[in-house]
Every structure is written in C-alpha cells, then in structure tokens.
Amino acid sequence: MLMLLLTCVSGIALLTFVFLISLFYMNIRDDIYGFGSEGNGGVFELLSRFAGNPKTWTVKRVSSLYIACVCLLFVFLFVPMGTLPRFVSTQIDIFMIFALLLAAQSFYLRGIKVFSKEIYDSLDYNETNLLFKFTVALLVIGGTFSWYILNRGVPGGLFSIDSYAAISLWGITGWYGRCGLASFALLLVVTSPCKDKFVSYDEEDIPLPRIFDALRSSICPANIAAIFIPHKVGIMFRFTGAAMFSVDFFIFWLEVFILQIFVVPAFKKIYTNLRARLPYKFKLVIVIFLGVAGTALMMCDLYLS
Image (tube, rainbow, N blue to C red; front, side, top):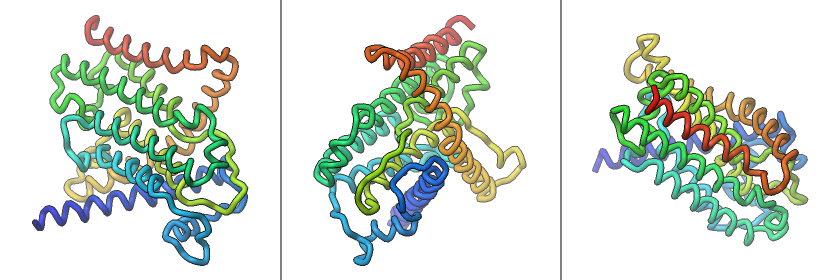
C-alpha cells in the first residue's frame, strides 16, 4: 500500500512538473513569435483562470477539454526522460501513446465545439488533424524501429520507446540507417502538433485551449529528445544515483526547450513554405516521402549492411 501511495505521489509530481514547464515553454514561444492574442498575460495569470479565481474566470469549463488535456499529460508517463526510465512500463508503449493522442484529439474537438462555436468554426483542416498526422508518423516510426531492433537483437520491448532510448540507434546503424533516422526525425518535426501561425481570439484569455496547445506543443520535442537524442551525460561525468538522474533529467528538458522554441519552428516554417508551392493534391508529398524514405533506408541498413 505504501509503495502504491509513493508511486501515485511521484506520478502526480511528474505530471505537475510537465504541466507547468509546458506552460512556461509556451509563454516563451508566444513572446518570441507573437502567437496568441494581445494581453494574454503570463503563466500565473493563465493558472489563475484555470484554477477558477472568481476575479478572472469569465469563460465556462468543458469536461471534454479537461479530459483532452489529461490524455496529453498521460502521454508523458510513457516517455523516458534522460536516464530515468518511463514512469509507466508496458510492452506496448507506442500503442498506448497512439490511443492517448487520438483520444486527446477527439475530446479536444468535441470540447471546442461546445466551448466556443466561433473558435471551432475558425479551425482549418490542418488544425483539426494536427495530432492525427503526428500520431500516424509516430506509429510508422515505432513499427519500423520495432522490426529493426527485433532483427538486430537489441534487448528490450519491441514497442517500447525505452528500447530506442537505452541504446542509441545512431551507434548501431550504418550510413543507410543514419540517413533513415534523420528522415524520421524530420518527419516528426514537420508533423509536430504545434501551431505555426498567429491565432487571435476576440475575447479574454481562455485557459483550457491554451493549456491544451501548450501540452500538445511539448509532445513532439519530448519524443524527439527521447528517441533521437538519448544521452548519458550523468554517466559520462561519473555521477551516480540521484545526481545522475537529476543531471540527465535537466539535460532532457533543456533539449526539449531548444527543440520546441528554435528547431521545430524553423523547420516547420521551411516545410510550410515548400508545401504552399505544391498543388493541393500533393500537399502530403513531403510527409509521405520522409516516411517512405525513413522506412526504406532503415530496411536497407538492416538487410544490405
């Protein structure tokens, strides 16, 4: 019973940390790129509205939006952070993340429709499919990596992100494989479920959609950092125990910050400009090419190297 209680407290602490740091990262991103409406206020103002301060709360709550945010938060329980293993250990992590992301998208759209018809009507096709495209990309990558590590004899669960983070795939692949890894990393970046344009609402700051956007924006950088930039900085400096885990945990979220604030927006802007030049029926060509190229190159590395 005591272990169960400690596990629950640890899980709540982790999710609270992810919740807060995602809001801070979003606030920094909004300040740099000018996203959001004028006078949105900072993180504490947003939290005040979320908590229901009667002096600031002016918009209604919708249970579907709460559930959508919780689903996104739960995704982080399956993401290894530095040398820390994933909080929830299963043999089907990829499918659990897949289900949580689809549930989050479904509840978000349902909640937004009830929350504000104006906002719902303003959502374009790309916005309503942001999480779905990223989820499919993650599933393709997870399936390819699972087949690769199965045939390479890499220990660990076939559908567990921990298996890719424990042993860097960059170190066990040849040139074909490394090009495939680069293609897959770009695939996650261009399908990253974060907004890439100015969004303004003609009403006071609304916490739940912004909180959902903050969590959604951290999903992709966290997965890229875990899968494609696994590190053991603590071990490199011969730290042990809590010091090792703390250093690597800090480095992990520093990587997420750099990816979320600088790398992902830069590459998404390039991708958006390229896609704008393509005819409508070829809008997905770049995404499909990166997915096919990544899979083909990983298979070439497996069977031709």
